[in-house]
Length: 266
Image (cartoon, rainbow, N blue to C red; front, top):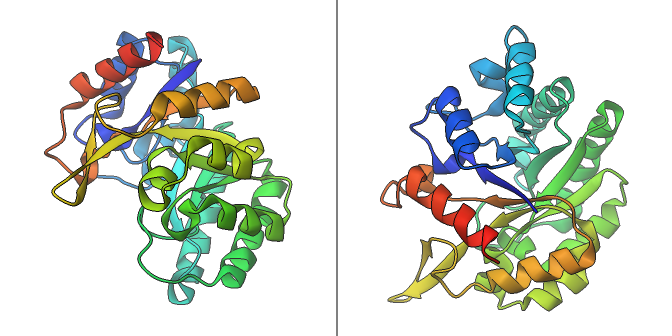
């Protein structure tokens, strides 16, 4: 079982410190979503054309991989499409240059559904990104996010686009928390398409969702993991600890260590 964490969980750490904590806690990979004040992977200093080879050599030396670049490229807002498509192409180019297999995009902006989305528009934009990425040998993953945390709807979107380099990033929290989906239902809808997952836990507190360390909430995390393993999933189980967006969450040294212990005791 391959473990990674998203750099959302350590927004104050330098890239060197991120590598060090991953190595110290025996992680297998690091999911890139910003380093310190730089949120977009193509703009991270260590990923620049001048630094890439050194960065890749250091990762290899430490036995670490970068399985995915998680972008904020948003497919459903016409006014932002030109800028988002340009950013998506930069992510794909960076992934190709650094032998990173996946780039995450968002078919809806926020974790929870907050309004209607035009499926046809999203499908057209997603098809354009997949077309560009296919020529670079990169796969595009759509997250179970917003209205597409309804995985039956997400499956229809994927089928409509019908591109071989298109898959799914399953965030364990969102289908369960926002649509009441059982893990079995999620797997039936998208299981064969899942290439990466975000392991995340939460609970309801006074009518509001609150994230908590994995194993301390009521998201059926163990069932999600078991079903993926039974299906033959060989991707990473990646902790998405959203500290960059909520600095009151526990520090990365605690959250990353607790997660590694939880997963290794399953």
